[in-house]
Amino acid sequence: MHDLKFETLSLESPAAHVTQVTLNRPEVLNALNTQMMLDLRDLFTQFYVDQGTCRMLILTGAGTRAFCSGGDLKQRNGMSDEVWRQQHAVLEQMIRAAMDCPVPLMAAVNGSCFGGGLELALVCDFIYAAATARFGFPEGRIGIMPGAAGTQNLVRACGVRRAKEITLSGEPFTAAEGEQWGLVNKVVEPDLLLQQALEISASIVKTAPVSARQIKKSLNIASNTDFATGYAFEIEAYNRTVPMKDRLEGIKAFNEKRPPVFTGE
Image (cartoon, rainbow, N blue to C red):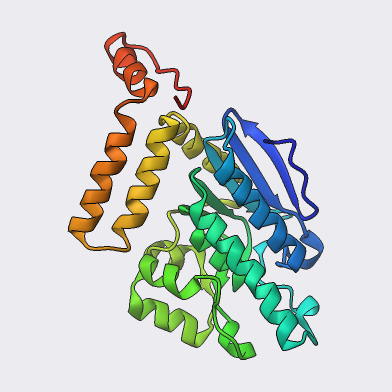
């Protein structure tokens, strides 16, 4: 899996079963151009098809200034309506692929995180942020609006009233405010961000791979449907884990007082 090559992304494995994906356009604050949208779409699609040995994805930005500053407005300057729509269709594919990614996905936000960058972070399962990170949705100030599930994921994270304030004002907010409002899981000092991300990843990769996928699916359903429907899905997801070898291994390891060795089978 780590042999994958992308023009705008760099991949590495900082720990067992963990893949770190770095948005790699630091000269433009890791802004999303068409190529990065294509690369991210293809990356998430590949993990949907084959997770390999990966059990955790960490998404971060190159350099110290930005996670992702949003859409590349220099590339968009002068775009025809048709080309703009075509580019946005790729962005839509990328967001859907991220939402469908079965591997737990964390955004390690190391700097500016605006517009499409914030939408990318919000589509992740959770967010760790450097204390110096700044967030915002400035789209309304340039005559558009969030269009990569930003309004959908934002309101689920912080509630409709706060979401309206953030998107309608366009005002930036801090990582501490993001944590207070429910967007950010944890705020850490900048030089400890990836260390903290790896520490929580070390706990997550101990979860049986199929269990992690089924938990993630069930929680996503829970935030989008009524209780009865969500619980029915949960039972189906639970039953998927019963015939797995990993379930037998987990019970056996517990009784033998040793760490389980999960294989995803």
